[in-house]
Length: 248
View (cartoon, helix red, strand yellow):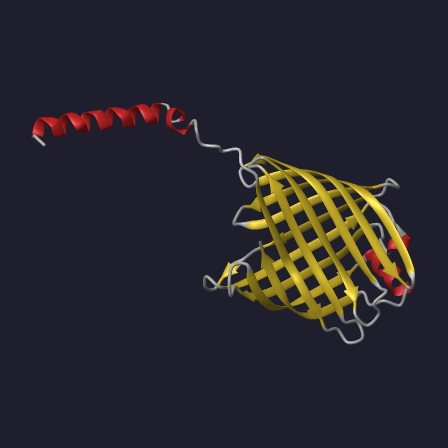
């Protein structure tokens, strides 16, 4: 190829590149960007070997949808091994909309079940929450709940992942619950209900499978602590935990 032909070819390629940069849709019109994605994270599936109060606990969430609009399903709960009839479970179904980079606003429905002393109590809530990444990469969720009886409550959770290596990760986690009114049958008092602090060290054998060990401390305060004492329960619980984190 002569230098003149090579020069002409470079001019044509350069002109085509400029046209693409000015109007990228001209070459991407055939690309389908409106795809449906999904994700499931079982953040906690663990055993808590408390003396006389051994328990299994789970905390999981997943979503399906598009870049800006998703349906979320969240569930958490605990079942005592020493007394299989005692436990609690929570389910949320939410519509989520991205409003800022790394932040979603969510609204939907929450359902609670409480199993204790042979009784089975349940209640429903409307949910409004904000979930995303706070500065310095703290995963944060702030939620308001309005029950079917008009009881208002709130929850704040925050966690952080500290990478020692690409596989060894330490995750501290904070959770605070509060309520605007007392609901004695659910052992919920007015004001701040409880504060939970957790620390879990996991090793990602694969990204989808990571066993972990850790500790969890929960302190009930205020009226909630008073209700717990009336039922003969501890207001402060410290647990060693071992479990597995799953990612799909």
